[in-house]
Length: 291
Image (cartoon, rainbow, N blue to C red; front, side, top):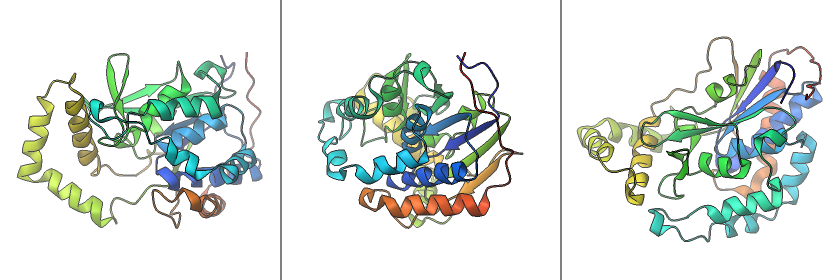
């Protein structure tokens, strides 16, 4: 365990390929002499957060991203999941992440405290994972309904953590840092036409009826899990991105779409620039020591 309270915590939100901006953001913090003592992530942000917590600095993360074969990433999606009510099961992806990047690491193996935010599809509430397999926690936090099957963890069926909070402040708060900074790289829900249409449909009479029917379905059915996840996702689009009082939010708008993994350098540059321009002065801190 860690012997002192973290001074600075960083929360990384989701965004799929846009999430590579987190690499640039972390790199920019380090270039200013600022090194997070604790980190939390949800969805793709959980992948970057986990690698950082395990000891990869911003420069190492950028090297890893630039060397990654993007076709290899897509190949992990060939994992039949219709029997689980989704296009992709997700176990193959989890095993690949564990084998290639995490080497079976658990949360207690990290160099700084790590928390992964997920969404309980039954209640729509936040579930924070900070123990056990890191790869399995990331699989749960990245489980986009209808595309990836939900993950059962301690009797909770979990899906994408970004549905509770676009930036996982509450997950980070459980690590009790003195200061918090959040990095948002997803689409601005207030400006997205698609999100606005889905949100309006969700709030319509038809949408409300859909939510009521889905809530009554047995959670044990795979298709029910996906429908419940889709319901949570639709309702989440009304969530605001605002940071809690006293917490700084850096919004990044990488010039790439969700699935353009091959354009990761542009996202990294955007994240780096956003932090340099918008992050407030943060006191240089002492290096975290483990007991």
